Length: 352
Ligand code: BGC
Ligand code: CA
Image (tube, rainbow, N blue to C red; front, top):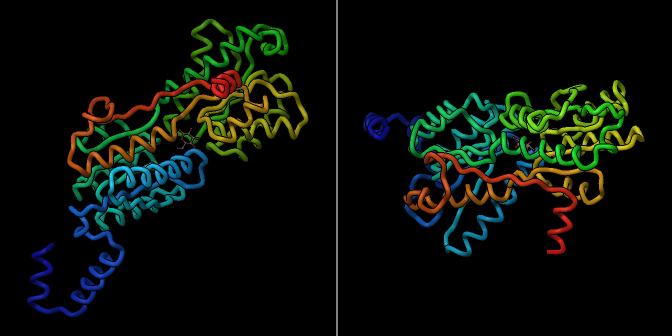
């Protein structure tokens, strides 16, 4: 590249020279040129699959807050810039290109399409920039491509298993109420997240397994995707209410937003709520638990994910071995533990 510039200047090609000069000025103005490296400003690029997702926007806000906190504690300047991929992988790849060309020190990627990770790995490796994937998990092969590639998130199976155990416990302790038709079988519907997302696939599988492996007989009335989305959760559930009405004894939902959508549908239909469970522990979900509408949820630790990413990014820019300060699996994975939350947990927390 340098050689190309030199040879171009020596032969003097005004158009290219002007373009290069303009590009240099732009980089300088944006404050993201490679010249920034080695100074006290750390540049972190964050590419989100979409900002229009309750859980993801919580992570974003937590990151922003933590960055300000670390700046104060450690007297440094962290330049955190976020890009909204608007659920489009092509858009996100352009955003990744932009972050890398602006000289970011660390790149955090909440990938749109998990199967597109190899392309992003190539780009980051070529630029020599550490890469942190989060929440949307690429296959291990992509993560293990190099030492400076990481994944931060919760284990999908764990959240599913804990959700299933919440229902199992309710089935064992309040069977009369739960088993509406008294047939000893648990009739359920399943609201799934985006097709292909590890949390949709594995939460669906492991939540039901927690019941069947404990010997509970279950009957799936219906199961379909509502793409993590509350309004789609309402529409799907309204359709199932039309088909199955009060036969629905439990609504499993891969996340809280869709669970809240299901509750909306039952309330609109003026039907008694079945047992509804979600995952995430978003603020509106905790409120719905307090109101007695949502039976329970499983913490998907947005704040823990944000904190792990900020601290990992800081360690990497300091040239430290992050495994010395952060709990890391196989040198690549930071797992945030999940936790069941019901009304009882919220009340105990309040009193404790
Ligand atoms: C969360 C969902 C979120 C999705 C986005 C999941 O882990 O539970 O609420 O929509 O990630 O990737
Ligand atoms: Ca039943």
